[in-house]
Length: 191
Image (cartoon, rainbow, N blue to C red):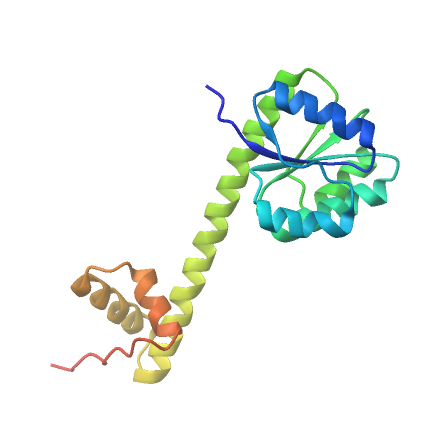
């Protein structure tokens, strides 16, 4: 069972937009307003939060790369580049801008398979990014506690962990409260 996706289709050529929209709809997905104008695609992406964006290489690779940059900047969905023929140089440039995959014209089922893979990789990427964010928050909170209570890193971690356990809170939530200045933990008593 294929999940119905909200798909942003972007290309500078109206004929290719229509063709891709037909294929995407044929796969059972919703095309949310095909986009051509670079200056509008970023705001549209931020507002509509598509599940995936398909950006076609039209007449100008520079135009396609600007579309990619605007969508990736919003970081709301993975971007897949649609090519009519292999173009290794363009793929390298698109990859530098954050594209997750490319599809060369082929069977619609191949498009669907590529989209599924990209969605899984994007979810893994976001999970990893969130994990790094949680780790950074915990490290910042430990630094604050180390300075505030003149304790070492292990002592700061134990203070965080003990407070989280006592209150049955997540460690990262306690750390965020400390970083935000909403929670002042008392130091450990000696003895």
